[in-house]
Image (cartoon, rainbow over all chains, first blue to last red; front, side):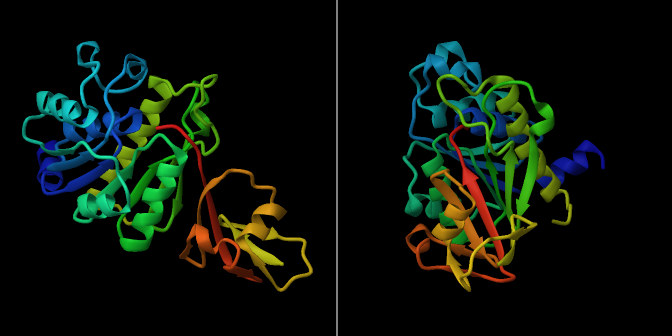
Length: 195
Length: 69
């Protein structure tokens, strides 16, 4: 498949991204570069200096809203991508309202209880929707431990055990690998891989 | 009791015919707090972890969710 043929498929697609941190910002940029037609992104938070070790923002964007700033950054990369950016603290109601019309949803939250909330909401209300979640990406090295575990339409990407904390922070290289693995599954599904 | 747990055959050492999700978690010494659980493909919500039953031959998925993203 040539890139223009790939783009013709991807430009018809909509991807929802819940969370615009390390996973969400990097996955969104990868999907924007290949020309996914529309990205629905959501995050309540603002950019802090400590985010810059892994999140797709710039030093002069500290203090700005993540969702709106990610939209700006995406449009500087690929202005043909339509970005629907929401500054919102997600709950089951807003997850359903924002993402029910997306073809695929990426779960890109930081907190484990938020991951549980969105996965539970989507599995119970949109059980057929492909959902890709990042679980276990803190630290560095250990490329060989990162993999995809599939549970029906739910894809868990990461090592499933490296929890992020102060002594074991998430860092750009390893978070970026997981974010791009997640984006890679999206492209795989859209280009017709049978799952 | 023999079940399939996360795609692997698993023997749970119990005299009971049915176990709740919380009993399976205790037997397996799972300590993570945030979970997604399905029994034979059916989502089990947190409020049913003490009532939903796992029986011989069931396909159980227990996905641990941890911070980072």
